[in-house]
Length: 100
Image (cartoon, rainbow, N blue to C red; front, side, top):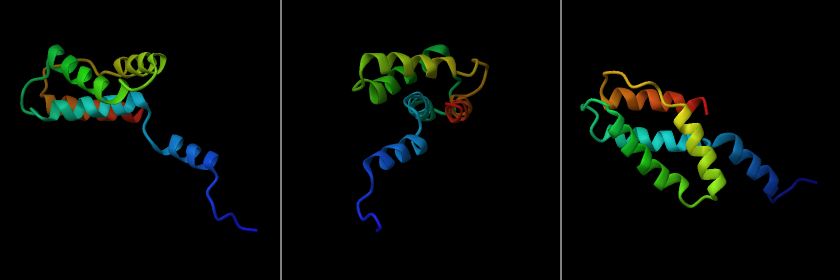
């Protein structure tokens, strides 16, 4: 007999396997924030401001333990700051997100 209703466990597993982790989502949002002023040089302050917005957007509604773990993983994945534009750094953040 064929199932006509999807199994909730199968749906949850599919979502888990296909959606980016919270840490990756945080890096993606931070990248998007940096892209808003892509031609400007990336600085520690610009990166931290973009990261703060990403945390507020993605992680705020989650339990504290998830917020802390996800923000820590995202921060560890930051590429080193070099004299490049915010747009170029955003590309690096998106690449780093793929590894999370």
